[in-house]
Image (tube, rainbow, N blue to C red):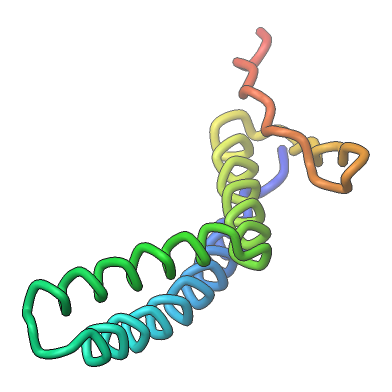
Length: 113
């Protein structure tokens, strides 16, 4: 019988990613409130400042290397578990390129009969 899918590992990696995103969201909420308060009494100015702060925080989050690493880990674990569940086969670990980053996941091959 083949390898068992690591769905617990998938959940753990998704939790780790969620924790990192939640930390950024908490920081973002504080920055939006701060920007809105500093913008002055006009509602339009407050909304504009808050929107800019939110977009800036979203951009910062998308560039955070820890978030990127957690996202890659969660994606790889999910794809590995799906492959094992569908094929019952072993999972090939991605080969790192010259930057040390794993390559893109390979397509699942249908079982040969």
